Structure formats: structure tokens, C-alpha cells
Image (cartoon, rainbow, N blue to C red; front, side, top):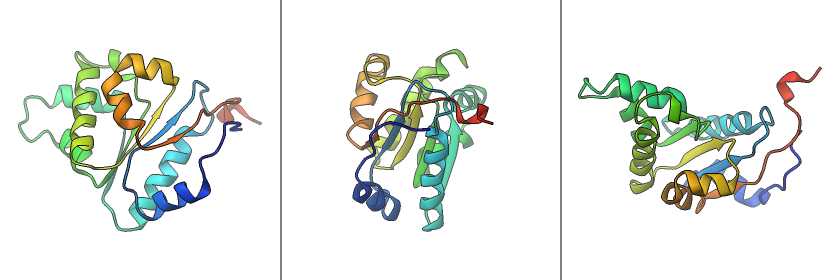
Length: 158
């Protein structure tokens, strides 16, 4: 179960009605519900008529790397241009492809610079996220930050 402090209901409700800023769901615990809650928020945005896109950081880095010969870069373009996007497991992309971290950072920069809200899940704690990429963390953390998800892996529960 999740034991961290909840953001105000008003802040989450406002975002669900009008997703206008980034959301970060973070915590070192695996299976604590970050992806589940982030996906529910993404579905809420989609149900309100917004074009949405979900992808893991590892998959995004690998697809961008594989598609570099293709000028259209469909995955990167879909991620960058969706009205609301979700990037799952930010921080795990470093080993997925050569320059994986840089590819993901570039896509996140594009979304931030074009004021397109992104839901990001990560197992990094705040200090590690700041060290991993200070500029991106600064931008992401200016949005709605859902505090540390902790607890046992819900996928392993009876």
C-alpha cells in the first residue's frame, strides 16, 4: 500500500479536469502503485478528449535509437506532440540504447518547452533525480509532485 502524503484533493481534481502541468510520481518501492495511478490520470485526460500517449522510458529510448534513420521518427513525434503523455520508469533508460538518457531528456525538453503536460513515474528519490538530470528535474518538479510511494510490492500480494 502507499503510505506517503497525498497532494491536496483539490490539486489532483483540478489536474484531472484540466491537465495543465507535469505530474511526478516517485518512490524507490517497486510495485507501490506509481504506474497504476499515473495510468489512471492519463485515462482521465483521454476521457476528457485529449490525445494521450503512454510509453516506458526504456522503450522510448530504444525506439528513438532504432528510428533515427527514419526522418519522421513516429514514436518520438507521438510522445512529444501528444496533448498529455506518460513516461514510465524515468531513469531506467540509460542502459537501453546508446545515448538513451539524452534521447529521453530531449523528448522531455520538447514537451516542457511546448507546455505539454507529462506524467512521469520514477524509482529515483528526489536527490537522485536532481543528480541524474538537474535541469529536467527542476522543470518536472515545478508541476504536481505526488510524494514518495512506499510499501510492499502490490503485485506480490496474495
